[in-house]
Length: 166
Ligand code: GUN
Image 1: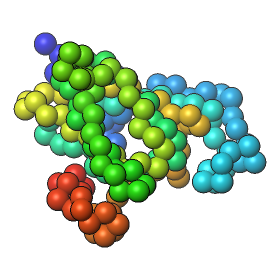
Image 2: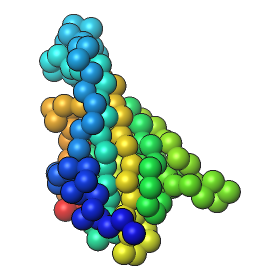
Image 3: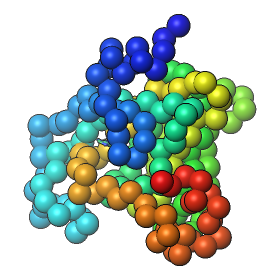
Image 4: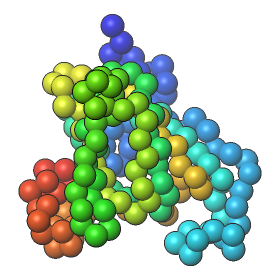
């Protein structure tokens, strides 16, 4: 049986600031100049990047947002519950996994600028997914939520934000 430690070692995963572990597996050598990107991108970007991302049941991926749509691909482990708050404050959730007859899906796109957080619901377990973005990832495009600020912006989701921020 694969353990969380096996995955960290065999896939060379490192801690991610949002929670969980990751390793960048692809960064296109093709780049896009700032002039050809929407204004929210401050400088040149790779056209696309991809990571492994592992989340365990003893922590969560805290609310954050990026400037790109982010495509999640399920690889193995237990299902992930993904929580989203749209820029208008609309809440939605989705289960990423392989129990298709119960509404889980193996691939999901989180729209750019949505605040999102993720957790593994099953105790003592973990999930391995892939996350692809285009244009490619840059920490300049990444914002980790500040609890108070996000609660002030979306007061009706105060409890959820409190639980899924640090
Ligand atoms: N590279 C480093 N962090 C991330 C992330 O959160 N998402 C994606 N897609 N790539 C990353």
